[in-house]
Length: 252
Image (cartoon, rainbow, N blue to C red; front, side):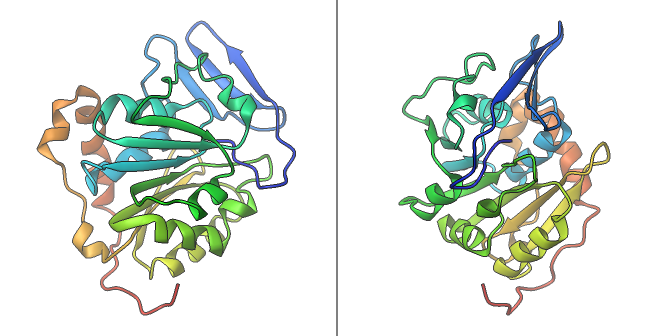
């Protein structure tokens, strides 16, 4: 979703309606977000469902940060399904935030807040630690440099709790470069899932030994029909990945 760099010219968001769905686009970009009108909270895009796999590692996050709002799919879902979690959403484009009512994004309250800011700057200045950081920011040229730099991912690493998880949606021609940079900062304690329906790759990086964070279903989460229908399939996909065997000595 949208998150240009510090000095970028902000793109104007466009909304398209059909009887079944409302979508968010930018002038020269592919689909950014989709909302089903009959079920505004549902996660319509595959990669957003995959990103919720963080709950297999941190089933009850106290604090969660999202970089990139877009149509608010992840923000709405987390607000609805994680009522005890403090959520900070960062979106650089005021035009995107102005559409929040059209996409049923909840109002700010004591546990949910949208910040109009550059995501890299927000994380660099963070005074609290997060159990989960979700990164989903794009321009028409792909991942902006401010969200792909060594400095940004180092700052994310430092903004996580000791057992925190970074989840990044990677898409575009430089996925390999971004993955290598993240893996180096997290001492190779990272795994990823590919999307069968698109070219997105979802990377999960762990602020600690990944062997101590193997995915598991928390019984309490299965009380939610939405999570009960979502998490078991993600867990099955994680069973197919190769897990790091030990913490790397690579320096961040």
